[in-house]
Length: 338
Image 1 (tube, one colour):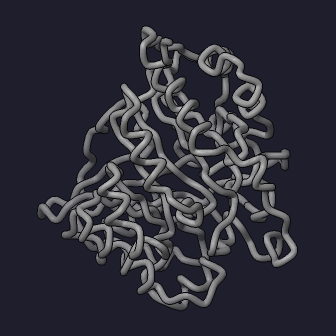
Image 2 (cartoon, one colour):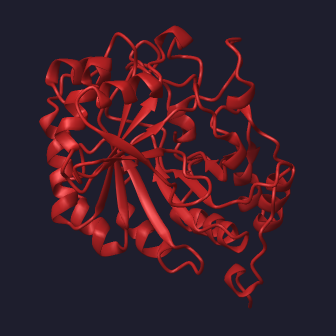
């Protein structure tokens, strides 16, 4: 019997001519931190009800989706959450996905707290890269940003464990005006001269529980000015069409950093990402209010590839280019996987 990998690969394009390249797969909606821009304590407290386990996709179901994704020309899979390493045996999923024809890269986004006991197993299973979230390099600000009384050294140790396992590392820092904007230079200094690429991210209006305001956005222009106040840098060309970070390198050869400016410098025209929630809802935009129920197709033995192609061909999302300050019912970041 033929599998999806035996079929000719298609390359569907959406209404704006964008192809499907990246798939972000959430493994859980739970997390062990309570970052204010993603899972604030006020909303995600002790009584918050997370997804029912029966609704969450199994690893077998995730593989079926990834096979369909690859048959549509997809190349890169990123495992997200919540905190994906709260899901047991993630290395088993990585090892399985590594055998899907057409998938060139498997990455994982994590807060790093559980990397020490998982990094070597993940690397052995075939994981290519980890992206860690680190919004401050000093304890007081890190605790304020993370919503937990955890020292920043726990994340740094996670980075070390990824290094030891020979995993490629990127570090994401969400910068919020008046809260951690004073950390731009300390973060840049810490990762300068290392092989790890630091990426500064503007505070975005994902979901509705983070009390986002444009007044709290510390723009990439301001971030760049901070770095340039101490170092000479120059722009670097993107690695590929659809790369979201604008790249810069230090003129003294001490590495590079990136900036993601979804608010001040939208990049919708090149966006080639789809997102799958832990319970199998497919979203074609980070700022979407609704998604399509892929779980029902999976569990009803429907044609996953046909379903995925149809959704992508009808896609016309460009929220960041049309952004307004109006409140709309957008899905929460912890659910969609960032």
